[in-house]
Structures are given as C-alpha cells and as structure tokens.
Length: 450
Image (cartoon, rainbow, N blue to C red):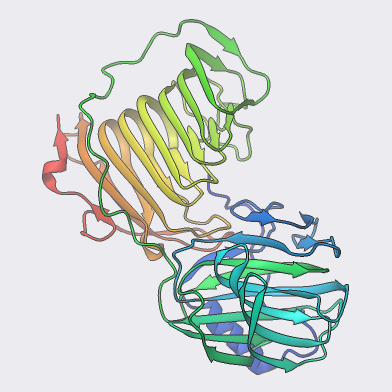
C-alpha cells in the first residue's frame, strides 16, 4: 500500500556540519530537483528495499540508519538495480567511531558485487577519497584533506556519467577522473572498521542518464487456461488470529481463511499470509476480514488464490524481482487489488477481478522509487475503474493481452493510467492514460468488450 501518512522528508542538507556553504546548499538543491528515482530517509523505521552484508544495522527512533559495529571489517547496505548506469547518488553520513586512520565510512555507486564499486570514503586520517574498489585492490581516483571527524554530518555525493566519476563532500568537488571499473551497478552505504549513521539517501538522473533497467521486451507465452468462470465454494472455513508465515509451498485445499484486521482500508493492518522469498501459496480462499491480504517478502507465486472481499490490499509485492499470480480472482476492492512496492515485474494471468478500483498499482510514493513492470494476460474484468496504474517518470511499463471487459458498454474502464511518481510523503498525480507504445503497451485487439 502507498504510505502517504508518514512525515515528509527532512531537508536533505540541513545540519550537515559547519563546512556547509550557500554554494553547497545550491548544489544539493540542484540534485534534489533532478529526476528522482530513489529516495529513503528511513522515517518508516525500517530498511525495506535494502540488502545487508555485514555489520550491525538499525534504524533509530529519529529515522536515522546506523551501523554500530566498529569492529566489522566491511559492512554494507545495498539498494537499487545492478543495471543502473549514469546517475547521481547522495546521502548524509556521520562517522561516530574510526578504529584506525585507514578505517572508513562512505557512499558507493555502480556496485556490481559486494566488493566491486566506486566508493567515496571518509577516512579516519581526516581525508576524503574517491576510490575504485575491486576486492582488495583499491585505486584512488582523487582525494582531499578535509579534517574529517566524528560526530559531524557530511553530505556525500557521487556522480557517474560514462567513464567519468566525480566525488563531492558538502557540495565541493574533491575528486574527478576517468575509470572503467564498472559501467553500471547499485548504490551502497559502507563502513570498514568504523561506525556511522546514514540518512536522506537520494538517487537522480542528473549524472547524464536514466538509472533504470530496460523494460521487459517480451511477454511470457500466453497459456490456454481461461480465467475461472465463477467463484469457488470453500471446502471449509478457518478463523485466523495471527499472520500465517509461509516458506516453501502452502496448499490450502480451497479452505477459506478469515479474521485478520477490520475489513477496511485502514493502513498498517497485518497480512493474512506472509510469504518468504521463493514461497508459493495455492488453492486458498481469503475471506473477510482479510487485513492486508498477502505479503510477498521476495519472489513469490500465487496459484488459484481467491479474495472474496479485499480489505486494505489483496497482495503486496515487496522485496523480490519476479512475482506471479496465476488463476484465482478478487472482488470488492475499494482501492486496488495488487500493490507493487518492490522492484521487478509482476505477472498476472488467468485471473478475474470484480468491483475494484484498480487491479494493479505500482507504488507512486514508497520510500524506494523503483522502476516497476507488470504483464497482464488472460484476465476478465468487471465493474473496475482501471486495470493498471504506473509511474511513467520512473520508466514503469504495463503490458496487456487477452483482456476481457464485461458489462461496460460505454467503455469507461481505464486500461492503463499514468502517474507522476513522487518521494515518500507526497501524493502522486495522474498525468494521463491509454496506450502509448512506451509505458502502456497494448493494441485494440488486446481488449475485448462483452
């Protein structure tokens, strides 16, 4: 679900230490006004969308991410996509302890693995250094003596454009050079034998390109399975008092599960099922109240899953890259059926939706602004406002084939609604709808009215 009730972003460059000048503030504002594709200020209290490697990480009550283990050889948090190319990444960084003069805290760009990246490091020696890191081999692109100390916030920024890499501290360029170590990769927050706090991470396309992976170029082969003709009769019913965790495969035998939440649209209800990465949920009927339906914490598969009365959302796709919904149906969703918060692609096929706001929505104001894709095939739609909503400024795509819309003689159902995605705390705006050959991909022959 979209989190619009959280506090707004704190200003990116406030309280970053005595070294900040008017020029530095202007540089930061220029970056913030570019095409933002990722932002996280950690006010949601978690690191959803990040992947940890080493160290002891936690978000404190003030919405700051900290790595507290100064004895960790290399602690990292990564986010974004390995295929991001030209971009600018910026974050506020506060060293809290250096174990030695060579210890470091820093920001990474174009990380292709946990040990290969460009890194802008604040060193225990007091210097700042822009580095090309390849395992144990570290090449300095440039550095500057800044008198770096603990307890002070510094704004670090790395700009990547082709083979040109630039590093900035508090708005001042400290290094620039040409290097061919990596042409694309994720962003990262890094410490080595040091502890530090991190906040206000921002990625934009001001580095000279768009840090987004290409949309899928092909649709999976259509199946011959028709959408189900009607709603199944439960084999039995079971009241659920707490979220059911699923790893591996859970087959419900078409039992009805109900009892979580209040049946409404109130935020932060618990899910009925929480699927671990790689899990499959099949042959399940979710009755009312259903809370926040199903949460997929990684790649997941939903086969023949039915929602009799969608509460907050039917399913939320959170932490993976590929999610498949095959068979089943959902009805009575006053807002949306499927909420896509993570990265990657959702495949929805052989499905039916009735009495809903939207079948699919790519989150337009989550803490992480991923590029997202949906492929919708062989779906029957009745009394639904829109089939998909996507954020075209982030490069989202929606592909449609074999869509049957029932009972809509005036053709009021929107196939593909376009939004302008915004940082967490703001509200996305609708900017259009309809096929365009770029983001909304379908032809008249893909839509049938009955």
